[in-house]
Length: 325
Image (cartoon, rainbow, N blue to C red; front, side):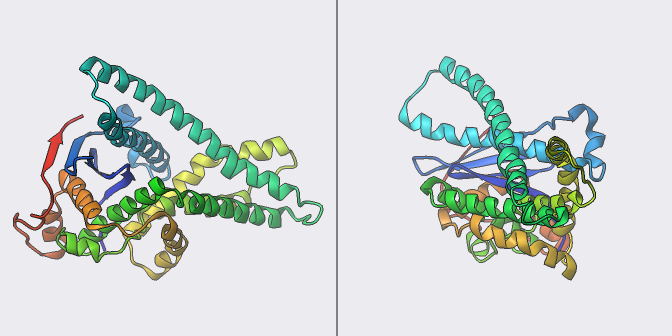
């Protein structure tokens, strides 16, 4: 299977898809139509794009870019709920857009700090409390990794019980199903997408699982007696861990080798929590987002030798409104 290099994420009542520098957000608006906004995303290292092609380095910047674009598109999708509640003037809209950018930056920074505290520092201190019972530092590193995974899984499970998050996970499933559909040589129709898998080896959930596993392995080679240095090392290793994890995910997306498939299993199992089966209306949104950034017909012709001329494959999809942010 050759990767289409299409990726994305679920947003509120919608799906964001990205291919190369192009991205599109398709949202099911309160009136039932699908609105598609498309544009180009400039990487945070736009003046040094060579960094995005260096193995183990590119993963660090791709991770940051995905967080920035993810927050931007999530904020955009949330705006439809606000518009339904109250009509605003153009001046107010510009003011709100500026405020949204500031809030997005603050939320991203705070989320990053909290994630480090909860998923990196806390597991270390919890495992260190057991040093009188478990004197082996090596065993405690493994225990720390297990605690980290347990905290992450419990967190994912708890938030999945929220109604809004549950719908978000359905759109996450729609995103995966659309990508799996075309990467398995099928035309992008509602029926084909519905019958495709909701798990995908290039998912961000799998990436985070690899981050936790790779972190355990790397810590075996870095040991110190200082508690402060242990915490600092764990934080300092994050870019290295992210870089390695990205390369693994990249390999997984382009290979069906048995060993790669086995390594991908934990992440795919975890996706059982972060993805849910979407309904056909959600699938329609996913299809609209893909078609705004990716020529799947050309992809199928090049990789599977199949030709699908433009026709009314998805004629049941409601009218779409297009624009550029």
